[in-house]
Length: 355
Image 1 (cartoon, rainbow, N blue to C red):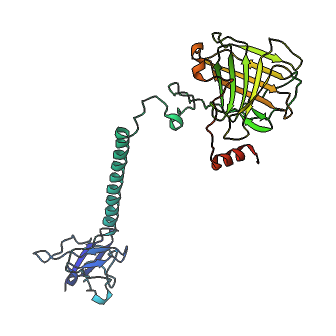
Image 2: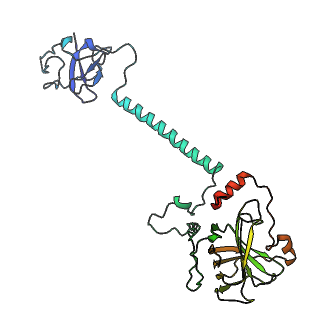
Image 3: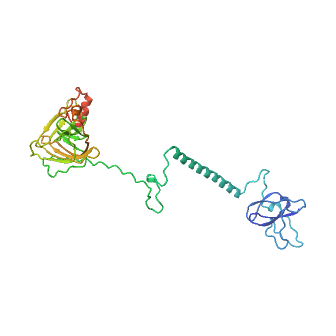
């Protein structure tokens, strides 16, 4: 039986095996990787060149082999070979091919994911929110320059709306000197019941202008404070400060009035004060047809009515001829009679009245 000389393609290890293994897959004894033993050619030789005839071979399968003049190659016994026969089917891919296949699969998945990402954001820009112009900051998500400097093209953030000042309950006093008015909304007590001005407006009467601080329906309010300014209906409400002490008397003193309900089925009661009260009214200059102001009023009634706070009202001119159509302040419209028990219960819960 002839010998076949071959070399491992992985580690270049030279070896010799019997021609009985021609065409078979064997394991290299050096690197333990599979290789195929070449078959014989037509001339009876091997398909690979023989190793140099001088010197020893680097590796012999089975027993050690020497090459030299007159030295015969000893056949290796099949039991000494670390070989494995292949199946009749296709060859099993090597480790390198497996790695290449995984790399190819990962590349395909990565390319598909990138394409889907680009498609999604492209559709969002075309069909959803409008694309952001180049060089403009997109709110807080806009990227800042790499050097940390401010982007000159970035839009200035919108200012947050100012928070309303907290309401501070006023303290009743007839000493107007040193009174400090809170920046919170107008509130206090009227006839012993808590009061919060839900509406502040100016009504015109044939003789004057009236600032109304209203809680409830303006037609028939639950609680209300009225200040009759010494202004004609045609006068413009402008910046001024009015201070009234409890000792002042005469026609120059503005009249004030309080209105309140004791039962939801009745019209509100009214009590006016021409003197004896303390008031400080501050009106700023009109801006965009609106006037901001502050007020403090203490009435000399037994319930110690007191109202104070900041407000803003509309100062648009109204034809005096329409004052009567707007509703006379001195003669409020009566409430519809026969309030339901539920309305009375809601009224009592709101004002803490027990009847």
